[in-house]
Structure formats: C-alpha cells, structure tokens
Image 1 (cartoon, rainbow, N blue to C red):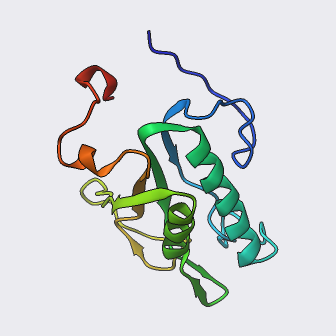
Image 2 (tube, helix red, strand yellow):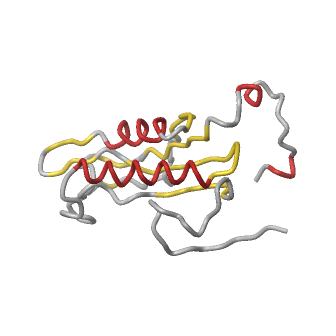
Length: 153
C-alpha cells in the first residue's frame, strides 16, 4: 500500500522522518535574496549557503537507498552582483554524499517566455537538477541492480 504524508516543518531538521524513509525529494528552495520574492531574506550569501548545506545533509539522511533528490534553482542577480547558486548547490549536495546526476532542461509551453525577476534574463529553462545518494553502487548503473519494477515509481 502506498502511503503519502505532508509535513509542515523545518527541512534542515526533519525530525518527523526516519533515516532512509523518503523515496523522492523535489524542491524549489528560496532564491537568495531575489529582489521581488525574498528581498533581504538572508543576511548574507554565506547564510543562504549554510541553510542549503544543512538541508542537503538532512535530505541525504532521510532518502532511501537509490532514490532521487530534485532541486529547482537558478543563479541570482542581486543588486548588480551575480551569485553562482547552481554551482554552489551542486557542490553542497556532492559534499553531503550525493552523486550529481544531471540537470534537467525544463521546457516551458510554446510561447512562454518572460523576463526573470530573479536572474534578470529571458527565462525559458530554469535548471532543475537531480541527485541520488552515493549508496546505490556502480553495479546499478550497469543494469545489475536489485530494484524490481514494483519499486520504481
């Protein structure tokens, strides 16, 4: 039987979830001080990265073996300065133990083009990325896995 549960809590300390109990994590974290959405939300870029680091470590703890974490993010332009959010989130997830899998090109519907208030550019393809814990093993990538079709979502 499939079981779904929504928890409103702190993603940096998911005390409601046991180790290796989650099968998929998809998120769009708060963008670092986005002028229109999160202006002055974080005192500094370092504070933002500390939140992401704690979140990445906690996500690694709760994800079941061989499961996936997806993060929707983009670099930020704040007060004329560009912040490498995508590169830093990738680094922090790798440091937490994840293996970087790939970025996903998010193709918007035909005719959907707008100026991003977050990055200051034409936004057609933000960059969701996905990771999986490094506990899956190379043998799985070669097709010699022990995951049955009933376990794949």
